[in-house]
Length: 332
View 1: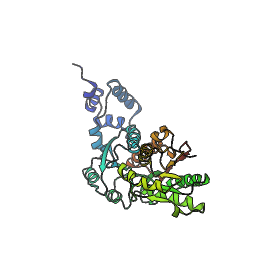
View 2 (view 1 turned 60 degrees about the horizontal axis):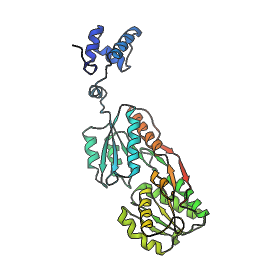
View 3 (view 1 turned 90 degrees about the vertical axis):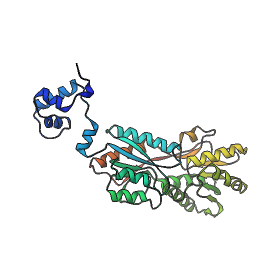
View 4 (view 1 turned 180 degrees about the horizontal axis):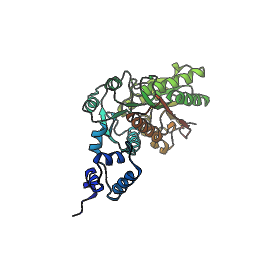
C-alpha cells in the first residue's frame, strides 16, 4: 500500500537513496558541504514524494517554536487599527514560516505575556502599544527575547517601528491654524499612552510656532469610551470652538455620532479633524480630514524586522514609516 506524502520521513528518503539521515537533513536545510550529485538525487526524491518537514522536529533542532506573540491592549480587540495590525503582522511572518499568538493585556498587568515567554511558547514579541514606563519592555529585555515596539520612542535600547507623530501632528496643526482656526477642543485618550503624548506634543509645537497660545483651547484627556466622550461634548460645544481635534479615529467616531444625534452639521456648524485616519473616517459623510499612515506597510515592516532579529540578523533600532495629511470635507 502506497504511503501518503505526509507519512514520508527523512529516514524513508535516506533508506531509498542509500545515504545517511544527516545527509538528507543537511541537503533540505542547506547546511554543510554535500556533493552536487548527492544533493541533486536527494532534492529530486524530496520533490517527487512531496516531502514536508515536520515543524516540531525542525523547531527542536533550531530551538525555536516558530511562533511570535503579538500583544494588544484589552478592550481594543474591535479597534480597526489593532485588527489591521494583526492582519499585516500575520501576513508578513507567515511567509517566513511563523505563526502568530495573540496576547491580550490589561493595563500594567503583564501576566499573560510573562507566561507566554517564560514557558518558551514564542521566539519573539511585538508590542502594538507602548505605555509610559511600560513594564513589558523591561521584562522582555531581562528575558533577552527579540521584541519590537510599534510606535515612536526616544529609547535606543530596543527596536521600534513607527511614524513621526510629532512632525505629522505639527504639520496638521500648522495647516489648521493657516485656515484661521485658533480656538480648538482637543479630545484625547489615555495620557499614559506614548502615542497620545507625541501627538499632543506636535499640536503644541504647531500652535507655538504660529505664535498662538493653547490657553484659549479646551483639552480633555483620558476619554476611554463613548460615554466619556459624550459626557464632555455638551460643555465643549457651549464654548464655541472652531474645530474638534480628535486624537485618534475611535474618539473621532464617537464625536461624529454625538454630533449627528444633536443635529450638528460638519463642517457647517463645527469642523472636525483626526490625528489618526481609517477607512471609516474616509467613508464618512462628509469624509474627515486626518493624518494618514499606511498601516499595512507599517505592520508588515514590524513583522519582517522581528523575523530578522529572531534569525540573528542586525536590524536598525529606529524605523520610520511615512505619513500623509488627507484634506477632506470636514475642514473648510
